[in-house]
Length: 219
Length: 81
Image (cartoon, helix red, strand yellow):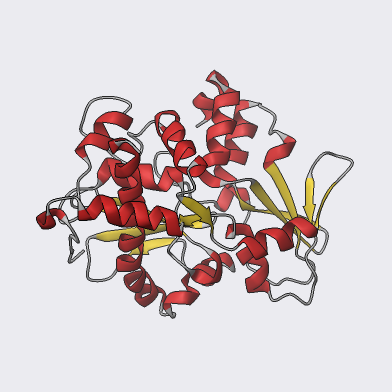
């Protein structure tokens, strides 16, 4: 595995850490439990955007995600929610946006920024070229570094999906299935680090200078 | 987004699927509502470009009660219009 691939793995891990770091602020703003944040948005029971009280961060929910941006230093984190309100999942685009904007107190990724940038700095959340990232991502997939967040839900949705005469996919889940579980199906295929991916990451971090490990943050 | 669609629709749709998954439409009591993919849908309409059928998923949500909004009430995500 080359240094860029290992760098992307490390960035995936950092994204998860930062999602966990910011989720409590989002929960507090929405006045719900952390594992209810995703459902609160999914069922449109909160404001789409606003400030995270007491911080320099703003949030914007869209689709099955939430963008978080630090208005002072430009750091950007897209929370790619997983099933059951989990935040240990990520997407290639979310990781790329994080990489391009991450600066202290979060880790910087100078090698990855140089590799994925569309142009010269300064960078923002749209400065990364997804078509430069995808080949690396696909290689990590092929090597088994990622896995689906909940394969059983992916399978459940597949069992209840049919192709209509119009060519569209129709999903008709059993009506007795809780609404939360139905929404979980939409994010069940999101990626998380596999056991193998975590092992690779641990080896990579162990081989690094200890001072660069386990960077903490006060948001 | 509209410009990207006009320039290279194949690249746009490929990347959109990778970024945000399929456009998800919820069918609630016979009415269809966009749940995921509002920006893409609007951009495709403005650009006059077809959405690939493989990018659309329609989910039956009969009986669901959820607040809904019209397109002209939509808040655009910064940098995507």
